[in-house]
Length: 359
Image (cartoon, rainbow, N blue to C red; front, side, top):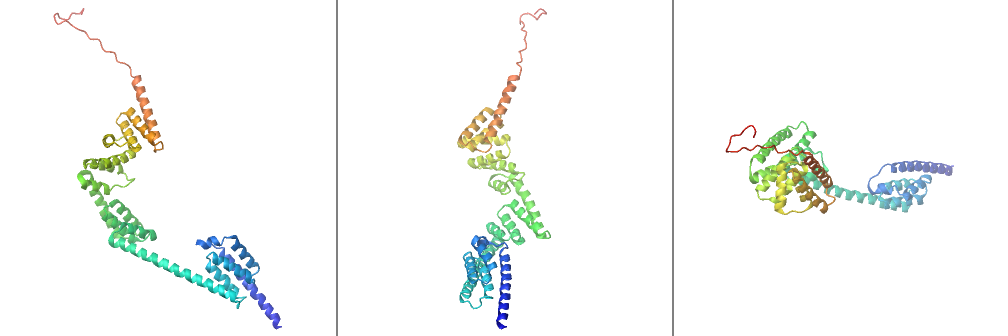
């Protein structure tokens, strides 16, 4: 009777282990992260799980699956598989040894993960400190990479940008902070102050002269802004006045790429390309389009074709040449269609005799 009870108990244990194994297999079918996620998809591990599910009391299959999981850095999974095996093979030394190894690997991984997290937390604290206390814009950016919705850091970034004389970017930061915390009255005050400062700076850019005006214009220049062309044109003028022809030419070329047809910009480009001797494709293309703007279409085409020969893949050059050639043909047709005006006959009279009707 005792032997029968033992057999029944053993059968129940095997059944329970089988159910547990099914649960483990289903748990391992859930999405994983990192290297373990890839290892869990390996055919060897999938096959070993299926085999253990069919024969849960097989020590060999269990140890084999545990080894595969450990090799795949799935230490937690290996611990679960080995712990389930203890229900059947409670006194097996090899099973206990593998379990100690797996648990040790889990502890080691957790230790190093803790170190990594502590290091990341320390770096984040340093970035936040440098951002909020020392107005380090780069530190603010690094802090926000980890905590993009930290209102205090977003505001500190706006303060840092304002201190670096980048008011428009500061205004964007304050707007972001306001979106995160609409009830923050300090942010609203900062936004109002920056908008007033921006208007003052823009006025100084347009009305002042010299380095002060140049810095003012550059501080409010933002790519894609509605006034980008006007600011670039003004910066070019100031750079020319400061005897910076190379910088002025680059500025005018950028302005010309935004809006062609401005005669002041066109005159400056032609003069600066000729005076600086620049002969690269970008400069020649800008000179060509500027000549077209100034009504010298044939010369403009020649300059743009030189640029195209130097850099055939220069963006937009083929379209510019084609447009200029169409314009030239149109002008030639207009000149050819204009009728010749005959000179009106004139009468000459003698100074000696008064003009008569017959004359």
